[in-house]
Amino acid sequence: MRSIILYCDGGSKIISAQKRAILSWGIVALFNDEHHEHFGHTTVHLNESGFHEMFAFAEAILFATSLGYQFHEMTFYVDDELIGYNQFFLHEGNGNGTRREMFIERIKKFCTKHYGKTVFLGMMKCLARSRFVKLKGHAGTVYNQRADYLAHHARKVCEGRMKDPTDYITWLKAGFQRWNSDGKAYRLYIPFANVDNNTFHKYCAGMRFS
Image 1 (cartoon, rainbow, N blue to C red):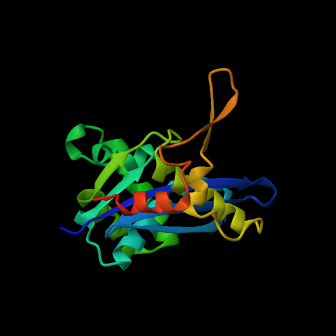
Image 2 (cartoon, rainbow, N blue to C red):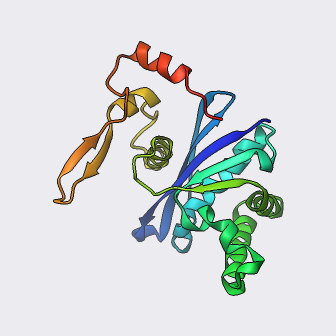
């Protein structure tokens, strides 16, 4: 059976003086044993600064459907609580109808303004039929970290401070910055991050993502 795995993450930066916010997103898509990346940005009113994860999710859906994938073939890895646990919040039997209605209204408001009714209906079908895995943010999950990096990169593109993102292998070799209990920074490196490029490419070529 065909399948696509999507790691998506959003970013938000408020520009108080302009009463605007830059919302950005990063997506890592794994399908056909290939690694694909997608990122972008938009600016919204300050009141909509909390929609960054929703933009990332919507763009991931659009990316997957543009490749011909059906909702039941999609698996999303996210660190956003509402999206990651959406099937709990939306389940009619959980007795929290108010929260369910608020969640649906939030999705409808977002889609109606930024994408339209078709995307709203598609997103609701996706929430019902796709698989979701809730991740802990900034915990060293490689593709989640990469999606986060791409979202930050997209914001810098919007600000005119950067053009092309660091390629995946160079980025991976640099490690992830972490802080210990004393507040001191250190670098976290994953296995194979310090080997030469040829060996690393051979290792990655042997990995299967589905």
